[in-house]
View 1 (spheres, helix red, strand yellow):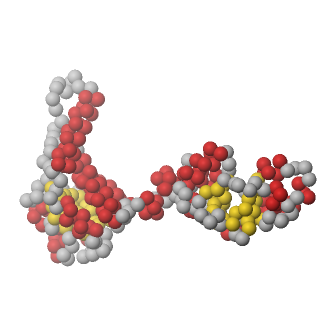
View 2 (tube, helix red, strand yellow; view 1 turned 45 degrees about the vertical axis):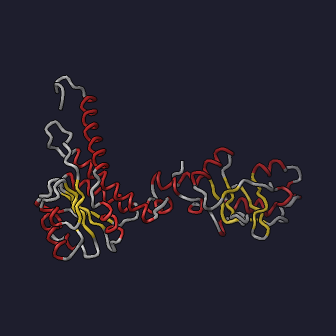
View 3 (cartoon, one colour; view 1 turned 45 degrees about the horizontal axis):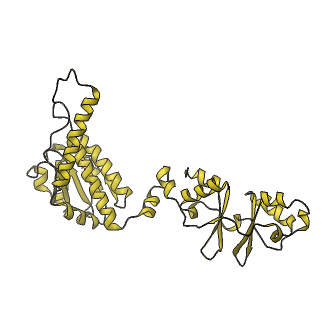
Length: 322
């Protein structure tokens, strides 16, 4: 590392490390492994799972890679090399493909997994700096990493090498996503929890429907309307005609028509052009509409204005769309 170590600030060290690693990633992009396209085609055709493994820091990279594959449409899992030698090799079948990560390609703990792949004709992909190594020679395809220097002061701690391996794993995952046509809806299906899942949820996923809806006829007396509003608990009633939304009655409508309210019908009190949303609308967008218009409820209708649901602001908040 250039400069006097005693005079370097932590920020100086950080910039040096990031500079080395970013240069290595640039080089990786420029020297993308020749087998990359073939590996993507192989993995897209796997009938089982993509097994990813490595020892030490490479094992942590393998876990992240498998998790990214699994969450983006490619079934995957990790198998620890040590556990593999004590029974977990049974997790690897001929329907799978195996990616083994080793900077040197000579990691002895991978030997049993390499032998297992050869014995049962399991496609083996090596990710290594040394294509002529034991691992590289045994693999059907080799994803060769550039021989870039590690970023630590002694040049030995896995830093640059693991960064490149993880980035190459991301590149594989994204390439497979695009070839599978894996979109936002698919991503939401695999991420139902947390902020990401909530941002991709549709109104249809959380809306109330069927018998939960506070539906009244246009000619319903207000006594019936008030009973329905009370029973359903949303503070509104929906007017329908032939299954289509014809209006809505809110607490505000009740207050505006307080004089002689009980002598009127639902149709005489209702707001005829209520704000609505569609079942396929992103929940986050619907919440934005409610916040902007200061509404707590939106009726959910299809394109032909057929009433299919009701969205309450509490449902959106409980789902994490905030």
